[in-house]
Structure formats: C-alpha cells, structure tokens
Image (cartoon, rainbow, N blue to C red; front, side, top):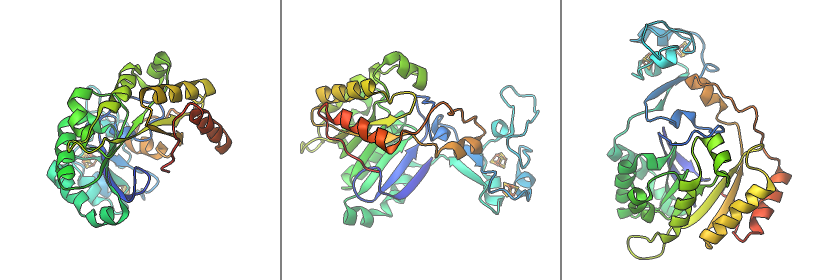
Length: 309
Ligand code: SF4
Ligand code: SF4
C-alpha cells in the first residue's frame, strides 16, 4: 500500500513502515480500507480534482473524471468507475494535481528492500529500523519471511504490527526475527468481536499466548511484546472489557506491555478515494479523560502501559 519513511510512532527511533495489502478481518472502524484485499487500486481524491479531464482522455477503460459515476459495460460487479478500473496508472501519470493516485501497487520484494535501505543511516543514528504493517503483513507470509530475513541478516531492526489472526506455525520464523511485535486485542467477547471484525477472537487469543514462546534466531533474547487495544467508543471502551483484556494479557504474557489507542477518523478520505461507503457514524473517539481512566484500569491488572504516539 505504501512505504512510509520517517515514522516515529511504530516502534523505537526513526522507522520506515511497509504497509502490506490484504487482511482477514473487516474491522468496521478500519482506517486503511484500501488494504482489505490484495488487489492493485487507483484512487480519486476528488477534493484535489480541478476537473481538467486529463485522466479521462488517457483511460483505456473509458472511465470519466468522476470515478464514482455509474458505468454500464454489462459485466457483473461493474457498477462504478472504481469497479471498471484496471489500475493501469495512466491517469496517475496524466493528472496534474495528484488527484489520481496508486493506493495499492505490486512491488518486488528486492525493490522494497532497496527502498528501505536508503534510510539505513537514520535507523542507526536513531535506534530505529523497519516496521511491517498493513492491511495485515502476515497475510503475505512468503514476502514477510523473505524481506524480514534479508533485513535481519543485514542487522536492521525490524518490528511488526499485526491483527493477530494468522497461522502461527507458518509465520513463526518471521516473528522470531522481530525486535518488537505489536498485536491487537479488539474485544474479549467472541461474538462482539465477530460482529465488529468479521471473525471470532479465539485464534487471536491463542496467538497472543503463543508470543511468549518466541526466541530470536541467534538465541539472544526474544521479541519485545506490546498488545494494543484500539479503543473504539461504543464498541470496546467499557471498563469491564478493558479490565478483562488487560487481565488476559498479563496472565498469558507477564512481560508484555500494553498500549491503548483512541479511535480516529483519519481514514475517511480514503473511503471516498476508493468509492467505499464510510459507515462509521456509530463510533466515537474517547476523550482524554476517558482514555486516562481506561489506561489506569488496564494498568491495575498488571501490564505496563506504554504510548508510542
Ligand atoms: S488507473 Fe487506468 S483504468 Fe483506472 S481510471 Fe486510471 S486510466 Fe482508467
Ligand atoms: S486529471 Fe486529475 S485534476 Fe484533472 S480531472 Fe482527472 S483527477 Fe481531476
């Protein structure tokens, strides 16, 4: 989806984030909807568009300026310009305002490595490195294994952000190379979890417990662990859920830390760009006081509470 250099929120020091497309969950509050599928995507930021028509003039699919407009080519599933788009990129090159942009692109693993290595000096001076994120980085296990091995063998610090829903035995070698693993815990109730994310939490709880068995390949130590709760007002921000989550984490992983992050709506503009309904009106952002109270409730169960934001 993106290679984002100079990130300071996703681990120690200055890091480059690799956002990889594809996710087995469908969290209703997701801020990266372009990463749901492993499919190349071109988006249209209509607020930047000046209506010049350069995009429509080069489009091999006959899509006009308005990608949200209905098209009728008779194929099933093709309703709007977004559906008809083959992500060829012609409009991206033609647009003078960067209103059309690649939101998901195919990229060779070695090209990704070359790109993140450009910032190697920043990593060594700041204690930073590379963070795999998404979407869900573990949904491309071969890519994750290859890139994480190359970076680990080059002495680059690597971290991972994950939704926690993956086959642990397949991903284990990559996990063991990580300096820091952030894993989400969205709700302790399996049915509420399924309602809001599309899957039950059982596999995620199992995987959180398994994190304690990881060891670095050189035998020196193990990944640092941070279990994250994205606090979504109206979904998982009850005192009971936060206390139960923290108690579970501290019991399964006594050395793990926790981070509670408030829900935000920064992703709204991306929904517009890819022609998806936003649909998050029922959620709210917990205020500073509520977040402090919930962090205190989590800390009372034992885990150290950290904040990378
Ligand atoms: S990416 Fe290609 S197919 Fe899609 S709208 Fe642009 S020019 Fe048309
Ligand atoms: S080329 Fe860019 S600015 Fe011009 S109409 Fe298309 S999207 Fe809008």
